[in-house]
Image (cartoon, rainbow, N blue to C red; front, top):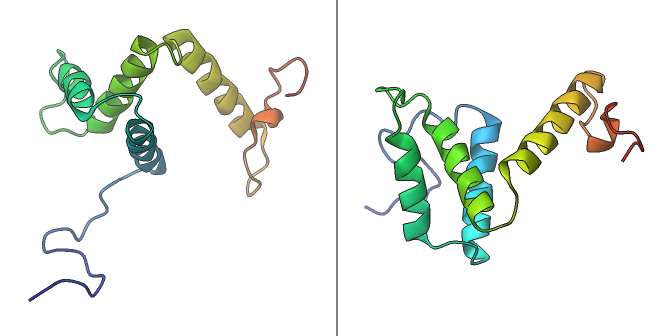
Length: 118
């Protein structure tokens, strides 16, 4: 019997991503691969290196933290964005999120730490 009814396959009753940022990191990785920034073997090597680092959770609850770290490593290795660039932008988004009233869209220009407001 074919499964074209839109239902999830057996055993997939739970969401694949427990947080929205995980889905976004996944989508960014796929998009960057599709644009030719890295091959799947490069991606697999980077992710594998992160997952094998000491301190990784044996139950895998930190899998997407490793996923994100692997993506950041590849972005730096390919000269797209260094760790400090990623950290600076992440901090700006965090400040913008805290400065945005509840229920309003978070916009980077809401970052009070930016001198020119952009």
